[in-house]
Length: 374
Image: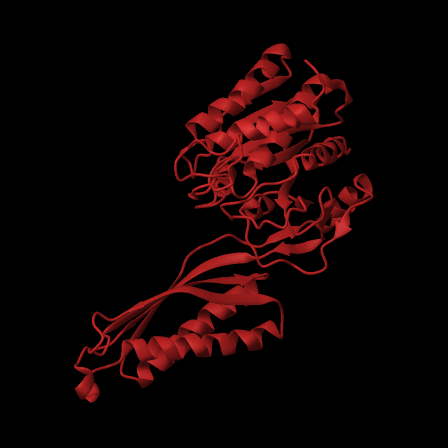
């Protein structure tokens, strides 16, 4: 067995990129991860591979220590048709690793090989977690519900995300809030249809929806003056035909906040705003907020250890309004989430997303330092 190098990480990444499976439906991805991890476990009885829940693969390096460091990689791709023309492009129709999870897996698979070669250098047990469904329902929450971290006495967890907005190879993060909580917001307005020539006979749900849309943005502008937050809508549907007052209107968007208090406040006050506008027009409003991801909040004490291990770590100046299910891990144990620059300028979730694979070695080297923290 040789030391992990860029050639090996590139092969892992490109093999996994071609597989590109989504959500919890990851049979070939899990099989590939097993194909790397299982031989390692067979070579040392201190290494074990297991599946604590659906579409989740773990490697435990059991050093007999009292505490365990966990490392997380997500495995799922996106329902996107790839348009990169790369020789390693996805072979799964309508599926693509457009968020860098193939790179995340490659780094942690490389770390697994490194652990197998240098077991005696580890001051603690190490748990590698390959999880599903980061992009959909939050596979991290399912992993936490197994009680895995309590059973294995895990008291810290680390994870990386490839990040096109940073220069290639740059690692950045911040103590405290890093990424936002996400709640999917749905507003339905119910009115009464009538011919537009007799609009007074109807109750205009589309007007209620439109007024609410504009008012909600004004409301959120006031909240943003207090702390970072965001509400944006991406879909609106209303009515049936052009010459009829709409008896229904449907609005979908996303609410992003960084604190539980602001999230609860926005949800309550937006519902009140919708009800008030709808009522003023003789309509009814129905509001629903999904239970999305909590905010990613890096543990201050653990972050200090990370800064010592990674002296060239750069600061992220302000929390970012994207969401990540790594937050569920941080509700179970202290954690630090970090960003690894790819420098490509091609945004995540683009059908043209690709990155400079040399950054994978940078991530692997950082992981090696983190698992050696006492």
